[in-house]
Length: 163
Image 1 (cartoon, rainbow, N blue to C red):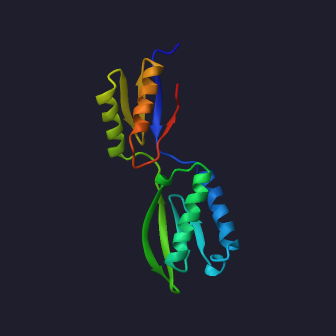
Image 2 (image 1 turned 135 degrees about the horizontal axis):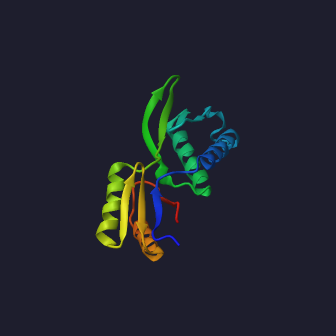
Image 3 (image 1 turned 60 degrees about the vertical axis):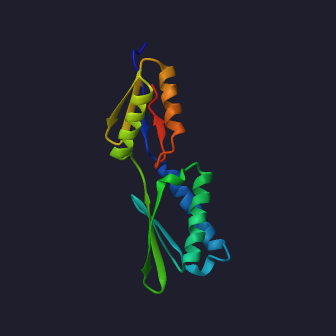
């Protein structure tokens, strides 16, 4: 039996679920009466979603569509970082939505400090864009998970590699 148990705290999202949600949004853009003739485009890049549409009103409708479709697919709203609205050619507007992935150093430090301050039998170490939490007891790890879940973090957190 293992003498130490551990898990990783990461910030990630299921890219395939995001692709599926955006496909649903595109289908609805083509069929919805108020959005049909706006020639709205959604382009998914590696780290962002680019939206080009006719007006701010249709942009807000697209935001709502993206959020509802993403929520139905269990994607957190914290992965979306809305950029500035820019003017595009032909009296249109454009906006980039950055996709947040990975823990920043500050967030990782806050998580490890919170674990060190509140749970004496649990160790936290920062490993790149993840925080590894380890302890001798699985109960201590469960307490660490509860402690992390109680806090409101600026990114979506997942717990992986529980062993």
